[in-house]
Image 1 (cartoon, one colour):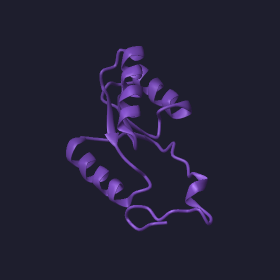
Image 2 (tube, rainbow, N blue to C red):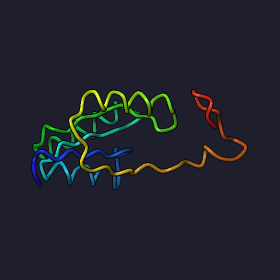
Image 3 (cartoon, rainbow, N blue to C red):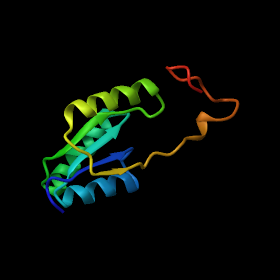
Image 4 (cartoon, rainbow, N blue to C red):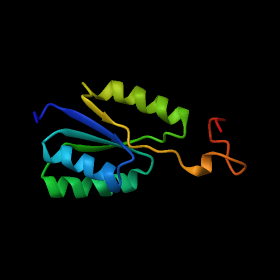
Length: 110
């Protein structure tokens, strides 16, 4: 894979998302890890960098349950990134967002 390829994965700290990000990093891609918890994100990025010897692994804050966070992420991404070649949406929906126990999130969306 060319080193100019930029790959982004949502929710990647463990499991298939982590393995996918790791594989792209092994192929020398620039890897953007978009995550809600940047501490866990930085820990995962450090492991990927160490195991693949690819320093082009970065973490960006993104909480998909907040429309404000999504808008902020998009604005910042457009300002800082030249391109996005591959997007892997590894995000799922948790049961807590439905039914009687569903909570109204920060921006008023249930």
